[in-house]
Amino acid sequence: MRGKIIKGIAGFYYVYTCAGLVECKAKGIFRKDKLKPLVGDNVEITFDEKEPLTGNISSILPRKNVLIRPACANIDQALVIFSIVRPDPNYNLLDRFLITMEKQKIPAVICFNKKDIAEEKELEELKAAYGRSGYRVMFASGEKGQGIEEIRSCLKGKTTVVAGPSGVGKSTIVNALYPDANMETGEISRKIQRGKHTTRHAQLFALAEDTFLLDTPGFTSLSLGDMEKEELKRCYPEFSDYEEMCRFGGCAHISEPVCGVKRALEEGSISRVRYNNYVLLYQELKNRKKY
Image (cartoon, rainbow, N blue to C red):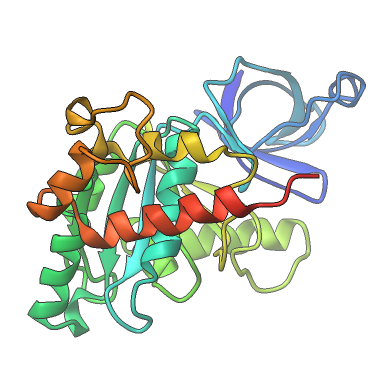
């Protein structure tokens, strides 16, 4: 039987199948091949004849992609959640999340949470900063249920990873989208005799037969890894429309004369918040020590 791994912890893998949730162990051949099953993997399993809804993972089907942090596979898109207020959005961190997804060619959608306690001017600031970024931007309140149906529509038919820092209300939105999330997490915790759930491990929730949502631990910082400074501009989708107006083919859009991106910035077609972050991150990569 085929299924999808929705959680892996303490050597057990929980596989979502048409027969229900199956608790599995991975065969030793994976260790030999240095291949570890990941949340999001589509797998083939064999059942244990003695124990109902238990079995073994016999094979891992080919992966569409792999994320290192959080460790997961076959992701179609990312739902990047930040709060409008309490805490105020960290634009630099938000761009790091978006760059991380761009590097791995995973489309991203931005959701700003806590709309119910924000003022209109704060929403307008975010629209000005990210409305022309090339990403879909949504506003929601997980607490009040505002915007949840728009998010649900955006997730339909896809496996979506939820990303964002701690304290922005990711779990509230996940619970609004999937009210059984806490109950399902508790059921797995009891099986492995763990305490109350906090999001320390990636977990996949089945919203519908072909719609999955991956909840992940919160992050406070994101490294750009081994990215070269020349790669960074390709992670800002809104730059591409204006690069043909740059005088130099390798324009970094910082100090060069006759730069289409800088001209678009001055005309208000590119967000100054986004551009300023680009410059900061470019300098960070430029000044990074290489060992």
